[in-house]
Image (cartoon, rainbow, N blue to C red; front, side, top):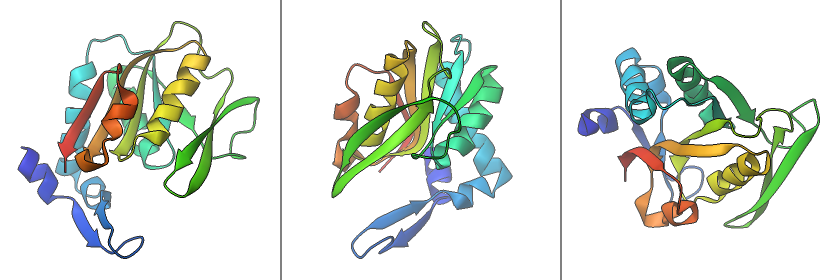
Length: 172
């Protein structure tokens, strides 16, 4: 099954810059069977785990996160780039390869003790997911897992999430 799902992902060389191989998931999303399989494989490890909230990381994490929340009978919380959320928010700033970036979550999005699944499409260096896990914990949420469709193993993002239950469907 892994090879079948991998075959549905388009590889785009030299995007967004020369030397980068981009794994384009839009080809999975537009294929009903591929999208269903991706969701099945992301949701499977978390079925019957009493997940209260699925947190989706902007922007492709919204696509998987919303669908997983529905499948798991959980609420959905978006984590967004600064300036996109209207109410009182909490911000995390994290390091990128060249500089920093920030993400925000509404302060009332997660109640203390809620079981949370953090979802994104891709695990690369792990900085983004690590920042979001930190936000969830600051709000008192219990991170039950962190799930990705794709993991780029050579970038060792998994090491930044040590101690967290991590699920990746496809590894490159």
